[in-house]
Picture 1 (cartoon, rainbow, N blue to C red):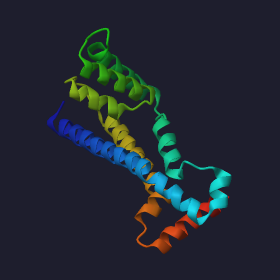
Picture 2: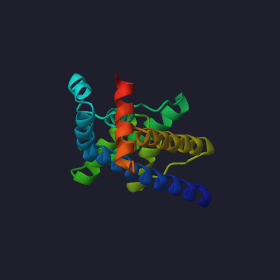
Picture 3: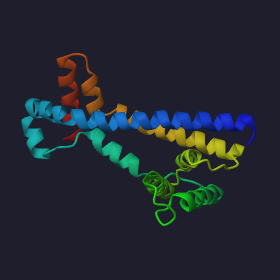
Amino acid sequence: MSKIKELELKKLILELELIEIDESYAKEFVSNYRGKFNEHLKKISPEFYNKSNSENADSNSVIEREAEKVIDVDEEELKKIKKIYKEISKICHPDKTKDDNLNNLYVEAKLLYEKNDLLGLIKISNKISLDFEIDSNDVSILKRTLQDKKAKLMKIEGTFLWLWVNAETEEQKESIIKMYVQQHS
């Protein structure tokens, strides 16, 4: 692999790792603030709260839906994904090694394979020093994957829960709760 392609791939993997940190932050954020949002919802609109019996702010379901999505790929991309997954499996599968770290990478790779996540598989292959030739088509796929992940994060950051937590005043928080009730009634 040329030095330029190697550096570009390294850059994409680092960007993926930052996005994964953002995803973890968003999940923790939702988990931490959902109960407080629901308490405020119950205080502002007890009839709506009781009617919906909502324990989930809208952002929680967004995270879950987005995490389950399979990436759309063409046949050529699917072949590459399968090839990388097989190579990872040869090293990390529990039948091949008793190393827990490698076994965990295998489990992660399997989930990424099921989602058609080429970038995630390349990240794992990088961790275990597997080299794959990356062409310009692969780079565009990887960039598209990063854009998709960023778009998912933006959806989460646009939820009522996110807006409510980041509101500066109680009046703004109350207004967001009222909009939430209005939209979900």
